[in-house]
Amino acid sequence: MMRLACLLGLVAMAALVLLVVRLNGQSAIIFSFIGAPALGIALALYVFRRWRAGAFRVDAPAEH
Image (cartoon, rainbow, N blue to C red):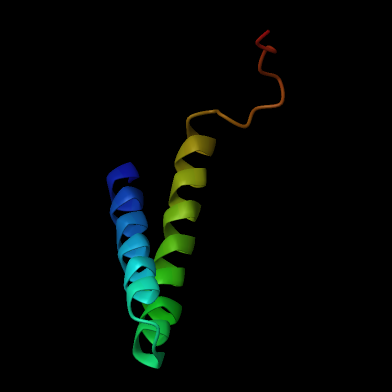
């Protein structure tokens, strides 16, 4: 699942680089319909995986 999140993050960054390099309507549409949803899904998968690993427990001991 983490590899899929990383892959989707790379897809989102590729769409962003395309948007920066070519500022036209086509690259904006690609980022809007492919890059942004890929980034959202990647972040959701990452947070879900970290949550399952216990990263967001309230009862975890504080690290100092």
